[in-house]
Length: 440
Image: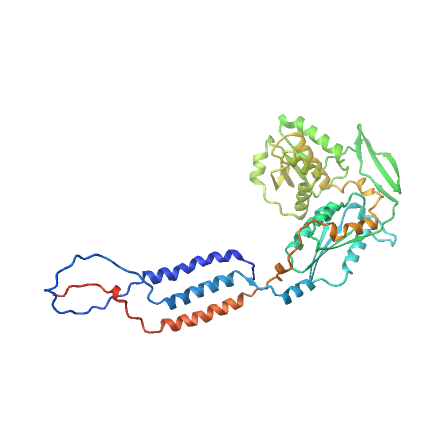
């Protein structure tokens, strides 16, 4: 028997209510006249009162009614072999689709790899009883979200990952933590080895240059083109700091842009600012800001939280940011990240992660021509290599399924018995409950 709401059993405390009522109920004693008692000496009276349940059968029925109601609220589910077989036949499928920049490359059929991946996933058979599609630009993050969904979804778990599987995009550790009973299928989307991508403009020694990278096999050719010197590189993320923090802010920005180059074409529809602790308008921004409410803001915040630089900064004891709000700077709606410290390491990691989140990703990383071969992918799909705890099929309860109706019927049946019991003639009071009285 599985109880989906075990906290409901705390309601058994209510069983004490009818017991207390039965014990505190006072019945009037029957007065019986006696003949003269003048020849009987008057004893020393002692106040003694006994409390006994006068109708134990009725009390038991009332307690049983409350127990049946509590059991129904606990959402019981009886796991039988037949039900376990039905649950094992249901497929719970979680699909992870790689949406990184490399999936925008064109396949041999003339279509983008991302479109081919989506069509391949949609054509999978057999149809699952429950499914979810997770699109992520980083496969470990998508696999983690898909695993969490499989853990709370009944049925035979199945994980499908569709990607071009560039070298470094996935590691065996990302799949090792999965339970052995999860059926893992890795769909490799083949893309041409030769790729040409235009890099965003960067500033080198005061000169704005653009690069075009062509990768073919183990060879990479880079063509540098000088852009207009009058077109400086505009930082994607705005930094709001006080006068005392300006030097640290500039150093953190320079360090961040040396890791993640800022685009010369920032996304004007996604303004973002990082507010330092000493910024003059920090308190005013915190007071007037509102919770984030736009989809791109949630995506950026999640990207920043999971960025490797931010994760490393948090591991080293620095906090990336305390709160994210939607505010207004110079009349423009802006995503605000409030840094709790002006430490160069923490703020540099935060600026780099925010710049990377607002940009189109690092094109150089997406040009990796080497991929994970099919044999290696097959080895990673082997259940014997996983160390995650196996799931118990007995705990797979279909959504909304419950056997509580039988306890509700039992409660109604007991209520009928309780009604009949209350209509019986009242029992005679016990002699020990009679009051002693002298009759003159």
